Image 1: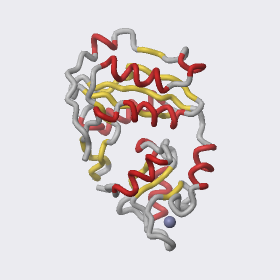
Image 2 (image 1 turned 135 degrees about the vertical axis):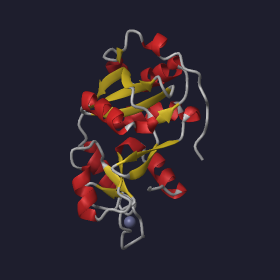
Image 3 (image 1 turned 30 degrees about the vertical axis):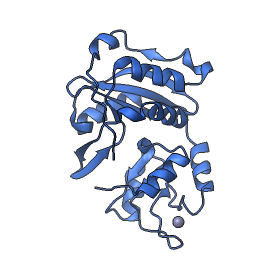
Amino acid sequence: MGRLTSEEILFLRRHKITMSIMFDATGMNTEHWRSAMTGEDKSFAFGTTPCDRGGHTLRSRSNNCIQCNTANITFQLRNAKPADVYIAASRSKQLFKVGSTTELKRRIERLNCVAYGGAGDWFVIASVRCKKAGAVEFETHKKLDNYRFAATYIESGREIEAYELFSCDYTCARVALIASTPEDERGQIQHHPNAKNLCAFLPRPRRIG
Ligand SMILES: [Zn+2]
C-alpha cells in the first residue's frame, strides 16, 4: 500500500489538494497508472517513479512533477469541471465520508462495490454541485479534521488507505459542508429527508498519525 511521507502530506495541504483526487500509483509503471486514472475523478498521482530533479513522487495526470513545478497544480485544477461535493454515510460502520465527484450515483455504487472503509452500505445524506468542488471538499475536510477515522480496504488486490472517513455526529458533518460551500451555492445543497434519524451515530474521535 502506498503511504505518503509527512513532507508530501504537508505539500498537499499547503496546496489545498485533498486525498480524494490523489491516485495511489504505488507499484505501477507510468503507463499503467496513467491509464488507470482515466475515467476516475483523480487529478494527481502519488507513489510514482521519483523525478530526476528532486526524487519527488507526486505527479499530475500528464506525468509532470508537481513538487518541482507547482504551476502544474494550478493548470490541472483550473481545468477541473464543476462537481458534486457529497457526504455519504455508512450505518453499519457509523462513519461519514466526504468526497467530490462528477458522477455521484456511480461513485456511491463504486464505494459499495469496493466496500470503501470496510462498509458496503454507503448512501448520500447531502450533496451540492459546486464550481470549485475541490476547494469546498478541502474546507469541509479541514473543519472535520479532529474526527478523521483511519481505515484501510482492499481494491483490485491492493490495500488502500481510506483518507476521507470521519466519525462525528450528523450535525457536525452537515454544518461543515454548509459552512464550506460558497454562499451563492448553498441554496442548492440537497439533504436526505431522513438523514438525522438514519445517522444518529456515536462519534469516536480519533486522529490519524
Ligand atoms: Zn520533482
